[in-house]
Length: 242
Length: 242
DNA sequence: TGGACACTTCGGCGCTCACCGAAGTACCGG
DNA sequence: CCGGTACTTCGGTGAGCGCCGAAGTGTCCA
Image (cartoon, rainbow over all chains, first blue to last red; front, side, top):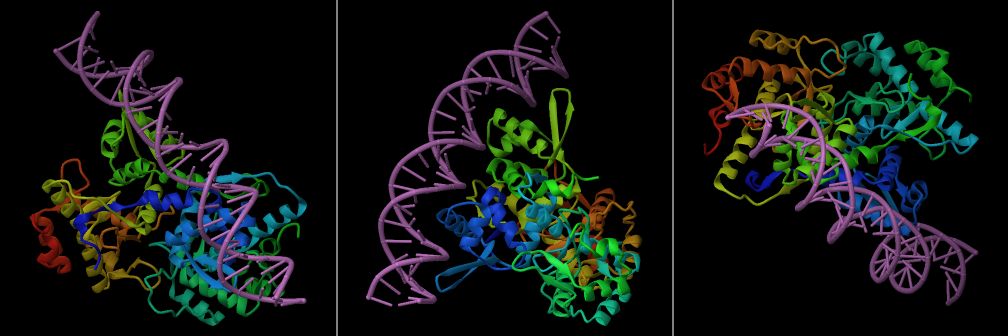
């Protein structure tokens, strides 16, 4: 079993927090929240540090259990260790203050607008669109927040009708979970059900990943589905200034 | 509304994590997880630092929004800023590795056993007893984990019958929430319902706070209630080696 | 087989920050 | 009003750590 309870005094909070307490490592973890695997070089460039510095940081994060690594040839791919890790980082990020930085270019501005509109958040959808979907589901009594977020019977049937398969083996992971969005600051659908929904949306091409970023764009098919099934307005279905 | 989304790049994860990344500050926050207000001197002694050092740390935690302070005469009382803060620290702590330290004395050993058995975790109950209560509620279909933790209709009636009042105004806070216990590493009842349950247990003297610590002891009345209502065995109702 | 590339290791630099003690301020009680 | 106590402010010190560049190892490709 676990080590004798007599020999431990409690969780080593400082050690875990220390891993995320550095600008560079935090930037890496937030980047990895898109759910994909990145190479060390990509993360180094993203964080703006030398490759040797990135190596040291990645070692720490892997040793701390936050990241899993996978080596292919001369590349070292690294990804978040699992959904639990993603949810922890996400939860912490939602409580963190917002950091403002100057906009460097026009494309920078476009990218930020696109991210705020729709993006992947590890394995589910986030952004304005995700919040709108969640609100509409709540309005239509597909989702209830009375005793924590949960699907209603109508909601389960609705998802089944959409072709969303949430029948995963019991993994202790909450099927429905509110995820506080760091742009909207309002909860949206996450957990196993949120992941299944995004998977279905990608499979059916309701949405597409934009290149290798975490930006998600709606297709016309997707807009049709959201308009019909949830009554979403064009104001949220189309990204502003796109 | 919020600042223009164009001017922010994301959450300042490193700043928040940095507050908890120090042994001393982490020890203070974990101590404050008992939900009570502590004076600066108490926290300094608990963490093993000089009063002047504690002052600096508390300033940082208050400035970061994690702690709320309240001044009474020459005392500075400090407490966690709110349930959301407590849940964030708790969630982080449940993912942190366990830190082992040598046992210094016999009373030390007793204290740790008592803590593992039953303790307050901000506003709800934690420890072996809390996990046993949660398991028993699940077995009796008072609580379901199918789509995240939620009370069943039977569970709502059962709580009402016990005199637990969970009718709080909608605060966005999940009424039922799993809280991963750092000794048991298994979820137990938290959230608004968990808080209401502890409150009822204290009011009815099913449990007592042991002095000014976070240790909770069961009374004979409390043992009777848990035996009758949930069928808990004596093995969990009595603290080991007490 | 040689050159380009991804990653790693190592040494050294410099900054940040946790810590303390000493001195100062506010408050309580006799 | 005066001693004791809680807390604060202020230098000074030392350790930890994030950073880089240079040199080294393994892999891919022409």
